[in-house]
Length: 295
Ligand code: GUN
Image 1 (cartoon, rainbow, N blue to C red):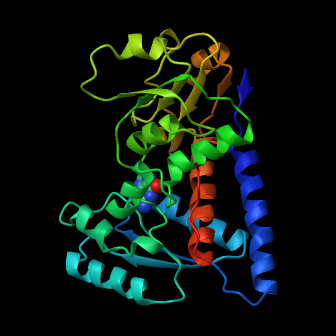
Image 2 (cartoon, rainbow, N blue to C red; image 1 turned 45 degrees about the vertical axis):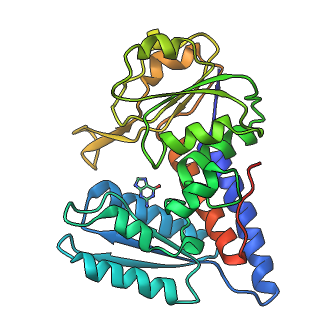
């Protein structure tokens, strides 16, 4: 069993980007600039956005954080996105999700200029991804692809079972794994809350991607020997022994599943860090006016 080390791979990705930014600066070209919007004060969202902003600084990007309280009107939020769209110094825009219930998320995403949509959530970018055209790939599935690529894991012809059909992770993951590319060329089964025989399907999987948001959901009896297990879950479990009052666990019961795997991602230290590395890659590409080609 080998651990897929998100810390190592994300650091390698960030080191490469830092070098490229130094080169851009030496050529007098613009410094990549990410704008992040955070609405309200959800603890997890605060942590994610803080990590994104910190990572920008680490590799020499500029970043701008716009914070609004949860009562912000939809119009005011949309006006601010429009302002960022029109600001030529801003290369990438991300609006941390979820948003408060009174705000229409779809409208917010549709307002982001597709050429600055480094999350890859705008329908135009989703359409390009589905069509196999160069575009911004959503950061979590993109980060997972980077991890599989780094470890040279041959995915061709493998049966991948993706659990969870969110627009952010499960659905784009299923599309990327089924593409005619390496990593890719998988036969993909996309499972969700209405799937009837989930355990049987998982037991057939050469690759399991767990993206359901339920702590310790995938247990050893659901995974076949030698499987590759990718754990997307970042669940906060109360733990009074921790200073923060919680600890993070994945969607996979790591201790019992890991011994059966050929490869597995830990939580923390796995996919979460790759999500940030992928976002930084998208932001670099936005700054130089290119889109990533995965095929
Ligand atoms: N919320 C959970 N994951 C993500 C993500 O990748 N991007 C944004 N903007 N919000 C999220």
